[in-house]
Each structure stands twice: as structure tokens, then as C-alpha cells.
Length: 304
Image 1: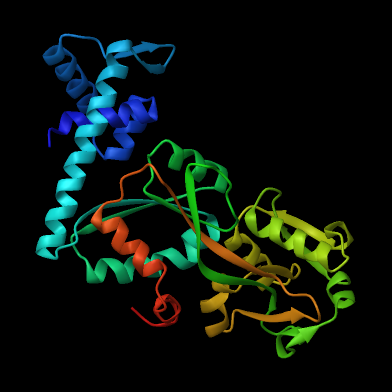
Image 2: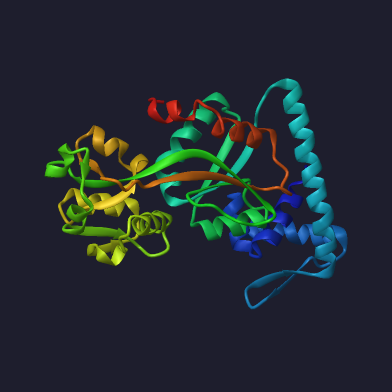
């Protein structure tokens, strides 16, 4: 396939030469040269560049329609040939929310690439809103998120379970208890994720179901990442509630302890989401099959 087409589509989708260069892992001058060459060959200007914005011209909009069709046909040809040869190859662009992207997806991706070394996986860790936007713009192949997304163009499927648990320092008395009371939780300094995070949202919802407002917590601090939460808890700055997947290694190496709250469960689903209008390559479909398989939990529990 003519590489000019991929460059053109990247600039059109990103609306930025610099962002297109970043996504394609080539220099911005190289992007500019390829677009210039394409415009010379077509005899038409494809982009207007004003005030650092890149906008498709009318000719650019027309060319975008055909370039997209050509790229999809090329992908379809690759997919059918892969089915004939049994070789899975290509690129998969995944958007993942923080907990999944940091603590779940790397092991899945490692397992997948070990079986399919011709596949290159790119992971973009972002919030659900940003992932949704990229899926609708067809700049991601799939998204893996911590909460449901509602959009008529997106297909949403559960791919695994999650549970939020109470985490404490390793030598905390709760570390030896299977359950604690809600009153006990409310009596301790609490380290909270920042507003807008998926973990905080589900925690607040589940607390409300147990007739507790999150403001009843003795909030000691708010932090912007799961890793920061774990480190704060480890040094005794408070307790917290985070995904069980985020503390697998910490429990193994005795960095943290965990417990649960009596009569108050914090279960949720992780979701696979993709655009129903986006062409799925053989590589992407193979990964989706793995994500929906019964072996996923054993993969996460096993050593690579």
C-alpha cells in the first residue's frame, strides 16, 4: 500500500502534523514532505493550515473518502490472506483506562505477542471519554474500559470481572482480617482517587448502595494515580479502596495487605468496546477472541 495514504489519513484524523508524526513514529518534516508530494501528484491542496490548525479542503475531503476505502480494502486483503496462511500479523491500537492499562493489559499483550510475534501492539492509556472519542474517530482499534459506554456506533462487551478491595499497610491489623465493618473504615484516614476516575466513580456508587456518602470518609488526601495511592497506603498515610488486580504483586511481596467490608461488595466489570463501523483486522479479531475466552484469568494468574 502507498505509504502516502497512511500519512494522509493520520494527519486528517489527528488534525495535526505533529500528532500524526508521533502516532506513526516518523519525523514531522517527513510527514510534511509526504503530504507535499501527494498534493503535487494530485494537483490539489488537501489541507488548509491556519493558526496551527489543520483542516481538510474540499479536495481533501473527497480524497479522504477514497483513501479510507483503499486502506480498508488493503486491510481486508491482508485479513483474508492471513486466514489462508494462518499467520496473524499487523498492528493493533488499543486504548485502555488506567487500571486496565497498567495492571491487566500488559500481561495479556505479552502473552498474545508471544504467540503472535508478527503483531505489534500500541497501548494508549487514557480516560473513558478520550478513548470513546478516538474509537469514534477510528484512530483506535479497540478500547478496554472500567465502566459502560453508551453510543449507537459502539459495541460494548464485558470481558472480565473486577473487585475493589480495601488496602492497608502490610503490618496493619486489618491485613489479617477477611472483613471489617463499615464503621471501622469510616474511622480511618482515607486516601482517595481524584474526581473523575473510574475507580472513584464505582467506589462512590457502591458506598451509596451501602447507605454511605463518600464525604463520610476521613479523607486525608486525593491522588491522581493508583500507584500513588498504593505508595501512600504502604507508608501509613491512610487506607484506600482500589482494584484487586492492582495489588497482585504487592500482596505477593508483602508490601500491602487487603480486606473487605462486611455486607458491602465492590464488584464491577471491565468492558471491551469497538466501533461497529471500523474494520477489524485478523490480528484485532484474534485478540478480541482471546479477551473473551475462558483462559483469560489463568493467563493473568500465570507467569509469562
